[in-house]
Amino acid sequence: MTETARILLSPLAALLLATAAATALADAPDPASARLIERGRYLVKVAGCNDCHTPGYAQTAGAVPEAQWLTGDRLGWRGPWGTTYPSNLRLAVARLSEAQWLENARTRRYRPPMPWFALRDMSDDDLRAIHRYLSALGPAGEPAPAWVPPGEDPPGLAIVFPSPAQ
Image (tube, rainbow, N blue to C red; front, side):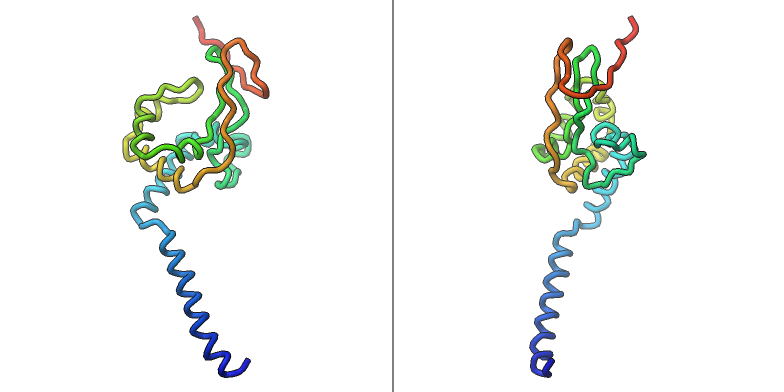
């Protein structure tokens, strides 16, 4: 390479490197947001969200790539309420503001086996962290199948819950 080419390419390379670094820094969340996102990641792991909402998570002891987490499942949960499916939380949260997420967590009563009361009892900070984490993951996957009413057969596999004792 000639000396002239080196002189011309050096500033160009520096400019490209600086642009790439600036873009990476602009895309990175600020430290407070990063901590909130990491808190949300921790909460969805320890609260068991992945156990139902991530296909194969429980069966593989969590050995599912994070890119596939919380995309819902086609495995149904059948009981006296009908058959429910773990929703795709990443698609659901993409449609909700943080305020709407908090309102849903506090007021919605989901069909079993979703422990809606666990969401209801979480602190606002924990719910915000989960929302931020799901938002950071971004939308992915397909919507879960629709609820199947009691007495109707689900279209695929379903885990059958015994009826509660009378």
